[in-house]
Image 1 (cartoon, one colour):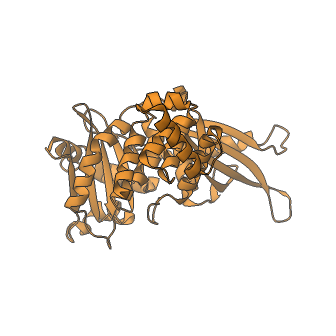
Image 2 (cartoon, rainbow, N blue to C red):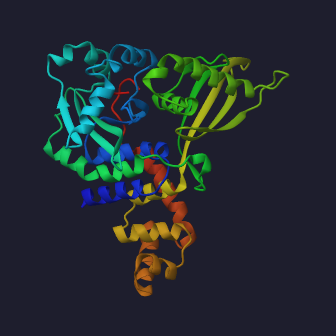
Image 3 (spheres, rainbow, N blue to C red):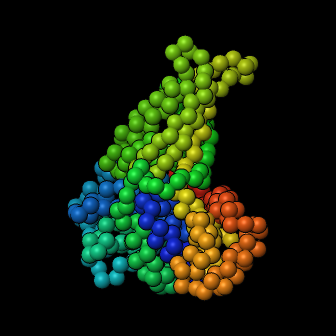
Length: 375
């Protein structure tokens, strides 16, 4: 039963039509619920199979990413593009491997996979029509079991939905879907752009907000781009007279919408210091939040569909027509939605689902501890 609900949830997520970059932070944890793994990543490619962008739950720091780019990515025989093209040419779009002891001694494993505790990997090739456009990868650690036939079969059954969700999609900037705040982290920085203290989640949000592209080829530029982003935000928090004024900025990056709030921090004696608190919030389309909210509700599959239509403001008669139900059956399901969500009328349904989505975001499966991209 849980598996059926999880698959239905993934299908619903992938059918929303939201931009891939907004979808992937919610999609990967949902997939890992069916395919146990400590982290996962998506690697988009161009027509030549060269990596054009990535999103991963674990990220190598820029210096290590640069080493990967120069020493491993560009190898003619076993670099990223040849390996991707070989997997894409195989009849089976899903494959897995465990690194042998000999392979664990190679420079590639030591530089890239070992720091990420990626001893077992499963790959899925995503197609847009006939063209392979991305690879999704799942990772398990040294103490984990290898991926098995059942894991591969599960991924095969999901690939068509995942591919439809992660194919090219409209920009959030052009979307009419309202945004909802789903994640926030606070860090402390200097006016010069140096990071003094911040949790791992803040570093991840910062990279997504500050960078138009996350890929090996721009690894060396990443630190400079992030520092410039931080300097600009902090500069806007101080006016020309040098007084402090909290500053809020909305950022539309390739990875979604972010709200950034900067405020100057006093030192231990209450004097103005060269330190700023930087609160970064990630937003997602409201339609995505509503679906995530239904995933942790006590609603049946039919009631989840009814709840989403209620959140869109539909009447009982409109719901009946939309779902092909009789008016009485639709009305019965509406009443059951009210009971199970503990709301009193249809206007409260959307708010309750959004609250559940925020709760789900706070307790979603997280990648294991370690460096905050596996290849």
